[in-house]
Length: 307
Image (tube, rainbow, N blue to C red; front, side, top):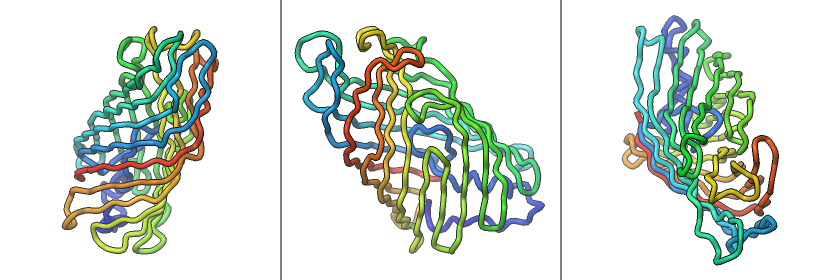
């Protein structure tokens, strides 16, 4: 988020005031719930290699590796005199991960796990201080070979309340697979600007960011994020009786956003380390095999175009 964006100073009677918090949120990879100021996002990420546990009867690569590509586009529409905002878009995220396979033979090639969803947001002003958010993300989550079994809807409902001119707090509930497994998860949203150049932006448990904005077009921050999904597996990629994969990474580290010439284009960079990882073959809600990869360093690089 660029340094030119502060908590809006709008009259309390303005219908846009209740929607102001939406414009302060940022989008990172598929999460339990998030809104965005970004119209277009292109991002790549890579994790260091590590050892992992190979389930009995499988062949695995010598090292466990993971990388991802994310593409996202969003269109914003204001309705009802500004009392209602719609965000309509789509997300594609492909994770390349070195999963083991059943049987003997040469080491398997990395598996492509895909998330392809519509991204539908409705934000509705309830009164001068409260805004209702409803999020739906219907889409496909899997390796792409058995689309019908991987179709589902994730989403969330929460209400933001402006507590002061510098602080917004919200609470709600999401049904999402940010932890790797599809679960109902409470949502806590906090946007606070204690000082002109500092911004606290948290959407727990998905992320928490502290930003320092020394000048227009440059944001320097430190953040924690939880990014994951539950993927359906086609027959040839299953281990034992598993028909799905739970995959998630919790990361912490410094981050940077830079706008050349202070325009709408932002270059983003994140580095750091994982503090928790989940790569589990499962059937229904039952764990079949845990690969238990070690914690590693990571790097993300991207570009985004703002509204």
